[in-house]
Structures are given as structure tokens and as C-alpha cells.
Image (cartoon, rainbow, N blue to C red; front, side):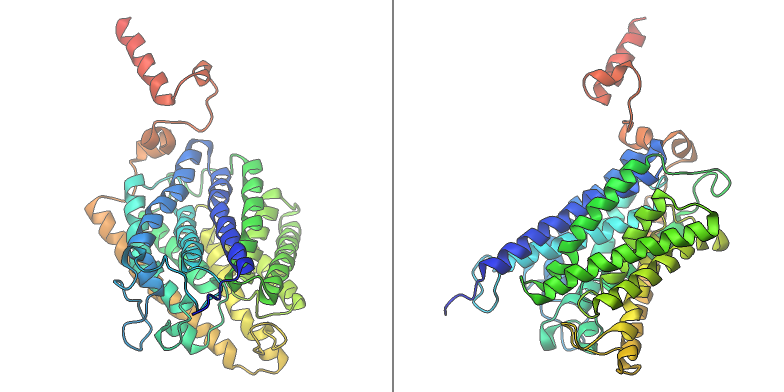
Length: 437
């Protein structure tokens, strides 16, 4: 059979995979700038550690669980053994316009990024080993099954959320609602940071936050437009809508800050950017550019207000994973039911375009199912890890700084020892000098 391989589609999908990979260090910088100086390396390591662990699991069985044929007709889980170790995926597939491995690589970045998002909720206080264990177990029991529900489009063998008719082009449910509610549950179970909320815990490096937000925005075009899996009109619409919604969300967040606090901040601008990106993710191929502006503006305002909920309800979500990702994901997913238009590549009308309440109901069912499943399973995973190995570092290590206690490093070396060798080597030399004296 003649190959259907299209070099343009292949190039775009591989480029998009690289763009999504860039989002992961971008997320690390975004989160790292928001924590205190004594925790910045640990935050970077949590995000990158999730990348390492989930990347391995994706090759071993994660892709098969997510994109293998469903067991039966329920659409709940992919066949774990179908692509175990990615066997059988290196040959050319004459039925699609890109190599199977290009799609495997693209979706691998989604899996790694989603787990990394959860880390922001428990910054400053989680054991690194416990985090790595959580990352691997949560990816296996939560992300891979949910990715199958949402992203496996293989007809009768696909996921149930897709077959039910929920629109989620690039992961409002599977990525953002999923990670947002997981972050909330993990933050509640691990407990509040020492001194929170009485002690000020301001971002230590807003420049790093802005750099991280910029990298996320840049990479997100691969996240959303790349989900078209082709260099086509759908990718172009998703690209422009992603840009428009993000601009509107940043303005919405800044306006909310100005009216509420009297100041429009750089942290607000960066957070508004991310809120807009989150909200347009499920909707980017289902709405018009005007719909994208509306979704972005609404998300910017609501997410700016939602980050204050942690003070009202007393949960310590360190870096506002709930306010941005859970709320933003819900906003974007549900507003598809209002703003979807048949003129878009998705071809479905929402309520405001004469489509009635049917699509809004489907969106609510999809969002609610992912939220409920992730909430319950995340709580079980966290409780088991807490009992078996413990979730958080000691109070003394948290107060002194998790970077030094866990990684034997500091993010900023201000003394004379900063000029040579590794931190470990400097420490070893210092101990020897003390012993000699």
C-alpha cells in the first residue's frame, strides 16, 4: 500500500512536540520564580523530575494505556500490552499522514507536563522521593486512563468522553481540570506550609516568572495548534484563537487587580497569560476569534478572583494551581457549550449560536467525570504514600530551606564559595578545613 506520509504534517507534529517540551522548563521557571529563594531549586527539580519519571513510563506502558484499543466498549482504559515498550510502532503507517512515533512523542510531552502542573500546589514542603513516587503512580492510575477517555479518538475503540461527544481539543479536562483537582487534594492532605498564611511568602524572582510565562505562551502554540496533528486550517484557527484568548485573559486579570487592589502587577500579567492559555485549550478549534476573546476575558477575571479562595477555605495551594488550572479548565470547558460555532473546524453550535443546551450538558458531564475521578484516586494515592513513606519534609528542613536540606544546593550562591566547583565539593573542602583546625 502506498504511504500517505505527508512531510508537512510530520514536520509540524514534531515541531509541536518540541514546543510542548519547551513548556516544561518554562513551567519550572514560572513556578520557580514564584516560590521563596530557599525553595527555587526544589521547584525546578519537581517539575523536571516529573518529566524524567513519566517519560520512562510513557515508553514502557503509558502510551499503550492511553492510546491502545479499549478493553470492551466502555472506553475506560487502553490495552496495556498492545504497544508495550512501543513495539510495532516504528514502521510506516499507510493510513495516516505522519509517523506513529511522531504522535507518540507529541503526546508524551502532554503526559509529562500534566504531572508537573500538580507540583505547584505543594511547593516548599514535599519530600522529593515522595513526589517522584506520586508522579509515577498518579500518571499510571489517573493521567493515562483519563487521556484514554479524552484523547483516544479510535471510534468504537476510543475513549468514552470522546464517544459521548464532549469537545476537548487539547486537554481542558485531561490536563488542566485533572491536574488542578489533584493539586488541591494533595495540598489538603500534605498540609499547610509552616507560617501560612500569616507569614508573607512572596515570589522571590518575578523576572523568572515572566520568562517562564513567555516560554509557556510560545510552547502553547504547539500544545493547541499541534493537536490538529496536521499543518492545516484547524491548526491555523487553533493558533489564532490561542493568541487572542491569552491577550484578553491578561487584560481581564490586570483590570480585576486594578479595580480590586489599585495596582496591575507583573505577576498578574503572567498569571493572566497562563489563565487564558488554560481556558482556550479545550475550545481553540470550536469557537470563533470573537468567542476566543470572550472566553479569555471571562477566564482572566474569574481566575484572578479564584486565587483568593484558598484564604477563604484555608487550603494552602502554594502557586495557585486551583485558581488558574482547575478554574481556568472548567471555564474553558463549560463555555464551549455557549460559544461553540458550526463555522469553526469542530462544526458544532453552542447555546449562543442556536445549538441549545445539549453541548453544554455534555461539557459538564465530561468536566465533572474527570474532576470526580481525579479527586478520589489522587486522595487515595496521597494517603497511601503519606502512611508508607511520608509526604513532607521536617519542620526544621522546611524552615531552613528545602533546597539545602534535600538537594544540598542553593539557588543563589552569594559568598566566596560560588566561584569554583560544585556545591558538594565546596562543602567537602569546608569540612576538611574545619577538621584540620
